[in-house]
Image (cartoon, rainbow, N blue to C red; front, top):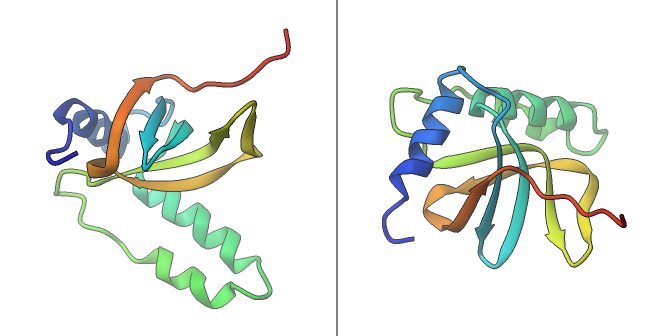
Length: 119
C-alpha cells in the first residue's frame, strides 16, 4: 500500500491503547496470509524477549525487545501473537507464532481469523 488504510491504523491504535487484546485479524502481506490475534506492541515485545531469554543460543538478543517505543505516534506495525501463516490446508506453526507486519505492506485484510477443518 502506498498509503496505509486508515481504518486498519485505527484498529491497531485501539489495540495499542490497551482497550482490547482480543481483536483477531487476517492480513495479506507480500503474498502471505497471516491470521491471528493482535497484541499491543509492548506486550508482543515482552513475550518475544521472554522466548529469547529462555533460549541458550539467543539470550543476548532478548534485551533488544525490551526497548520502549513512543506510544504517541500512530501505529506503523501490527503485532500478532498466537498467529499462523496459512499455506494450503496448513497453518504454520500449528500452535501459533509471533509476527510483526508493517501496516504499509498489508494489501488486504479482514476481521477474524481463519482455521481449517476436515468437517
